[in-house]
Image 1 (cartoon, rainbow, N blue to C red):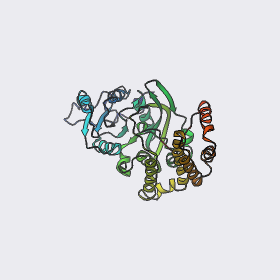
Image 2 (cartoon, one colour):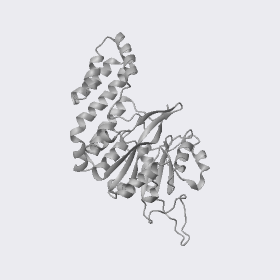
Image 3 (cartoon, rainbow, N blue to C red):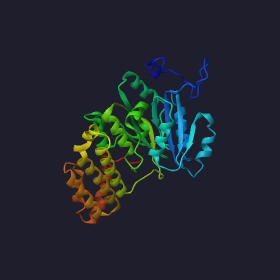
Image 4 (cartoon, helix red, strand yellow):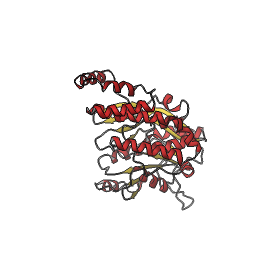
Length: 347
């Protein structure tokens, strides 16, 4: 059912595009949605990302591209879009800084994000806005996603209702990191109330934000893959030490900066989260053949929260003679791929 069925006349500003002028006055009507794209050396993919926005069935939006200090031809490519986008250049500050810049410039009542190498499916905004119109208490609507590369779509992040929506949503986000930034649509007033993205943590600044939102507002899920996340070698990755440092920095912020409501959502789950992260670190070492470091990480994970069975299991596997581990790895891959909890595979 089209979103216009749910929108009140006052919200049906335009279905055509942004920068629509009222024939009765000189003021520019504001769009309903602001779409923010942080771009850093994104020349290879940004046109596809923009086209997926312009192909939306819901059309009352503005597109804000924040160029985060690109040194490639990103700016030249964007010039051909003219007034279809609002372009801002800034010194490189990272994705959180670029998103914050976009939020400050946004005119819309709702904020959406798209990474410059990912894609939206055409009904993404329409379906999310329909939920907002049914429930004025909603602060954020998220969706499922799928992964793709040059060979096609290969993985789906759906069936999340149990891990995300069952129990405390803020706690679930903290534990499982299961909301991708391009999947969200957020009321702009939410950012006015709880603040912007933290710019001083390398990974998890998006989780940090979604936890704060879920602790203070209602959240809803469309358990359908409406986002395509591109897997390619240039995706931002962190080494193992940076991953743990970022998680620990995020935990410290959640415990101390945002008040008791946020702290209470995550406090008792911290050992479990650390256990998940130590497993992710250990598994990286395990796959690369560094079994001594893998063993230490699995041991730390088991120490923090023994009930995550993968840590003690893989700890035992590292004690097997190395000549026998490779055949076991091959057998495991044929049975099922590994899933690491609490870690986003890519930004």
